[in-house]
Amino acid sequence: MADYRQMWSDLGMDLEKHDILCEVLPDAFGSVYLSQENRPEGMDYFDFVVAEIHGVRPAELVTHQQKGGKVFGTFCVYVPDEVIFAAGGIATGLCGGSQFWVPGGEKVLPANTCPLIKASVGARLDGTCPFFKIADMYIGETTCDGKKKAWEILSDFVPVHVMDLPQMKKEKDFKAWEDEIKILMQKVEEQCGTKITPEALAENIKLINGKRQALARLYETRKNSPVPISGKDTLLITQIAFYDDPTRFAQKVNALCDELDGRIARGEGVFPANAPRILITGTPMAIPNWKLHHVLESSGAAVVVEELCTGVRYFENPVDESRNTIDEQVKALAERYMKTNCACFTPNPGRIDDIMRLIKEYKIDGVVDYNLQFCGLYSTESYLVQKELKEAGIPVLHIETDYSEQDFEQLRTRIQAFLEMLEK
Amino acid sequence: MAEESYNYYILFPNHNEGLRAHKTLKTAGIKCAISPTPREASTSCGISLLIREADVEESQQLIAAGEITTLGVARVAKKKNARYRSC
Image 1 (tube, each protein chain N blue to C red):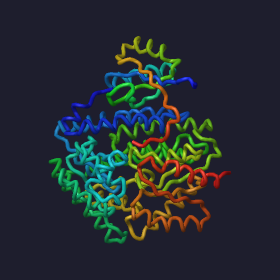
Image 2: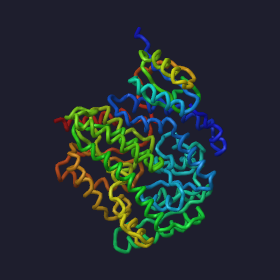
Image 3: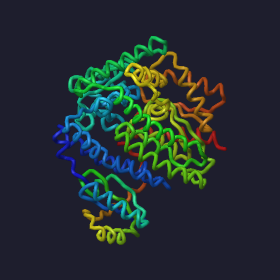
Image 4: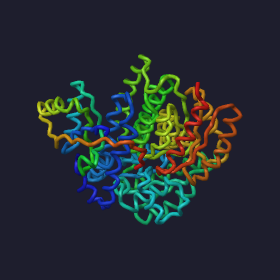
């Protein structure tokens, strides 16, 4: 057990409060993750990352800063990490998936704000997340009203650069997003004191594509029956993708996939072949939000794909690597990121197309349409998602929840009834 | 009265020793899982190795032979009727 207290203290964290979080994590992780049967050996690395979640990676980021490097905290899959790495910076996700941080956020935000935003703001205000304390700059975006106002609060503490994400997909919007990426480049260059070259950008487009390819390979294994890895484990890996060193992460995921290929060849899985195959669609699940997957998989279902930001939205559509000028590369980045189908766009038929495609590719028996409480965008779009699924005769269950434990048994009852309906 | 059952955690001064031990035990075919250290075992955060009771002695021998530094083995009672806990 490494002692990171000195680092946390140097970062100005509230050690006493943070200690409460340290106390809860082992029980939560043990009951949700280590209780699973027949986990792949390759999960060892990801278990290690969780066990040292506020230690090893933050220490690497601090070392990067001590060498003069900059760290950029991000919240969303629309922020192009390629640009940050090309300038010599490091992009890292920021904490936001724990109930532990919610009361801290409620001190300054209305209670009817989504738990993801409350937890993020709470983690920063309470000083209980090293990533928030380390980041030299936060990169926000305009994907929802709650976040837009949260940036203004957070900018009292750390410089925040907000990317203005278009809300439609007209030709002019693609151009506007290109311009936003160029503005981000300037900001990042100023922070890092470097100039992004076409060579550096090309190298880092490949780097981030490498991470995407590894995740795509991992998700591809889940198309098999029996499925060789649980949804919970895949969710954890996807959550870690936002924080980890991209090269190391891709190596570890590919090594795991080699093991999963062996399982597939042997017909070995983690659930019976007749377990109901579930797609989850909706709002992101930041680490350590494992609640819905845990309810589903401890009730006999297999979660085999997520149409979430912590799912296929994160890695589908690689960036075109053939461009060799900054203008063309930025255009390729804009084209790639604008293919992501978030509910902040209107209209957003691409998301429903994605869901219908994934249902076929992953041989889905039922869909759980999930949103965090007070997420107006996804809860409203739910009407259209459910309408389309019902018309296609695909069973769907809508779940709205938060990070707390209070509705766990109620969720279990509803989910068990849904699964009974799907029994093969 | 139901008999108490326990989890066994090997504790380490840092993650490098923990990862060395993990590799050593895996190579020897001993089942072990990397776990966050439970509060009942230590007040420090970070990794420990969760092993089976039957493997405690052999694990300790292998770790000693590999000159890996540990902070001992902690025995922690398994929670009965553990319900879901968010963190």
